[in-house]
Image (cartoon, rainbow, N blue to C red; front, side, top):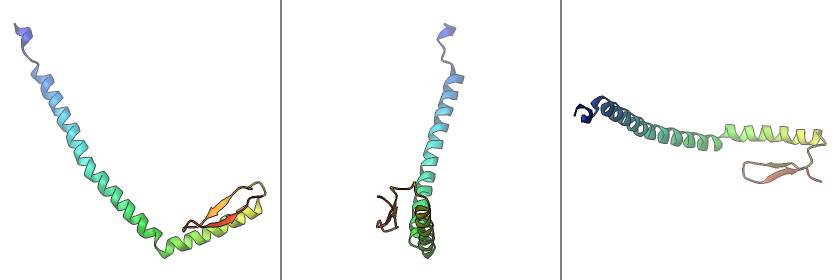
Length: 91
């Protein structure tokens, strides 16, 4: 009859592990949500800033010079931040 007694150590360990897992999952959910929202707001503000526009203008000029220097770049579209095609170096 002693074989019929439940193993309380295993059930406690299983319950503790389950509670720890759920606690970690539920604690990480608001953390991930907050991090994602902060990242989205920061990138949105940066894209609307003067620093972003000057960076795009500078890099666009570099890409135009690159496409004019090398002949093997024959199908290249350079698109600005508004979605307009700035350069098409196709045939």
